[in-house]
Length: 415
Image (tube, rainbow, N blue to C red; front, side):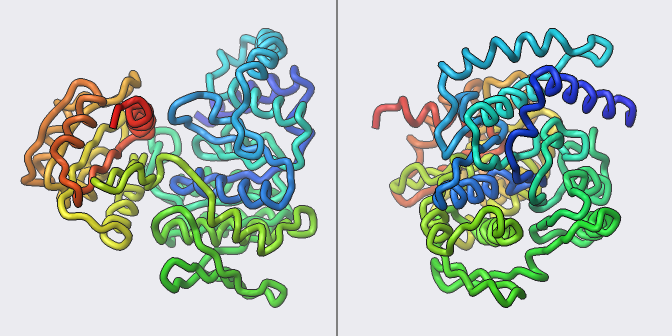
């Protein structure tokens, strides 16, 4: 397996070499982790963009349109740019030795983003790792600072079935003698990340050790052990205490690169007050309350459950859920289904979406609420909204693919 992973990086290296190594043309911030990656990337790029830097942002997966993955200052790459870049990308793909095996869609998409950022001469790019980190296609950038968000169980078939193994993969984005920041971690993951940092002499700072936050109502107070960092009071536009963790992680990363990319407290306050990251506890409506969250593993679903209890007020919960095959369906359902007053099982259009009939027995193990199954997602959305009263909550979750379809449905549905 190690040999297969090495070939994967050689394949991506060959593709980037055929393009003239665009990943070397811009400085970067690289973000790995199991949960919170996208939100942290959104916060970092928003802060850098608000401070006046031309900021690239690369994330995955997309919710509605593939172009969402590659942005400059939050504006997605245009169709015209995609068509223009397709020509050199295609020529480069043809030059990659066939002995490495076929390039993946993610690898080609990553090359698209890097080439776009290089040609548009971004000041900095904030890049989200796809899977793992150590052998991920994105790990061929040379990050100014490496960021690791919370590590939990996911992709265990490829990353291993222990937190130390998964964290070892994530910590592969650390660079020798460079700064690194870690969000709060469970002990097993934290030890693996710290060990890797020690091996590389990477200056690792952690939220919960060098960095802290406290809250007063809607205001988050971010503080640090550093004498030259004054307590920063911000209002984070994204919902949940986990987003306060993410905001503090972003602040620590920006502090680490302050000499190269100075972001004022005013810019951070403005950016965090307005930052948007669709599909993560995203509120679409208030009466009834309609919320989307792409939680697809037990840890993420538990974060959503805590947010339901602490941050959202409602009477009955109408849970619309669909999962991808191979994910921890029971873990997600155990966290959320017991609170539900009605469950609507469905599936996204994605080829790996789990059939509702396969999920139903798992739901019955976790709740006594009535269960309805739907062959397509829009029918489930319509049913949940039709049965919800003004003070109820309709929560769509289990997969970012399902959340993306919910966004499409919401934009097209007459209300």
